[in-house]
Image 1 (cartoon, rainbow, N blue to C red):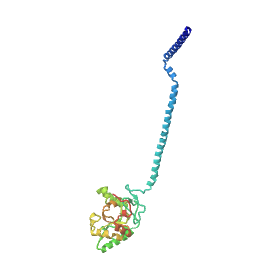
Image 2 (cartoon, rainbow, N blue to C red):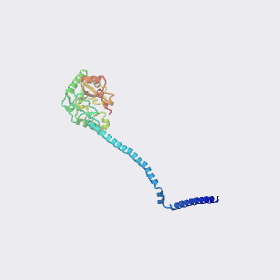
Image 3 (cartoon, rainbow, N blue to C red):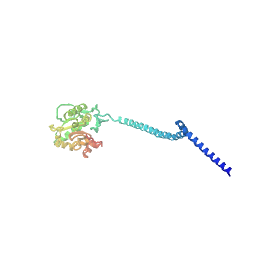
Image 4 (cartoon, rainbow, N blue to C red):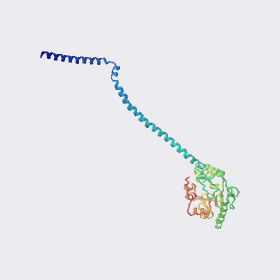
Length: 301
């Protein structure tokens, strides 16, 4: 028994000594780890893990790069498509006829008897009718100048109108018929100096847009010249007769009462325009203006 006890005690002491030595070794190792390099080296596997971990974020930028690239491509495509559409419309716009005073298309066939001349449609500045003649009618002035002239077809018609009026006891006289572009320009500018451009445009045409330049229009009055081309002409027996009978000879009151918003001009009972008997009668019977007859956009100013 005694021998076994000694052996057990020896084994226990041996075990304790081993434990003590292990503890001392551990303490020694810990005590020796005073340098950062030693600490880093002991966790060298961690950076590897960290690097592999950063590989996932590394993929993120590449994913982000994909939208960035596609966004860049789409944004680049958008500006490219927009400019390309704009030039496409430019040639169409360039086909618009030349304009005068900022808003008027130049008429392609100014010689037409039914030509629509207004604030939106102008005669070429170089246009001059080739068949102007002196109608055999009375005028309020004695000089023989261009203001007496009309195109042949209109001149013949106005002679018949004056003769018809005379049969009904109405004595008429011409006030102003044909005007050239240059004459209309000088006249309009004189009105602008007098009343200002905005006011002048309510009763006088910008050069190129006056019906007088067609040779198909004429202002008339009573033979005494009273109220010639003036508001007081409205309501006179001459004005009443013209409104009722002018269409029978192919003429219309071009700027009728209550239609200023459409024609762009105030009521002018003295201004006659030749369009031919058929159209004149239709316009008269339906109480239309030429703008309404041709179903064009109304003139507002």
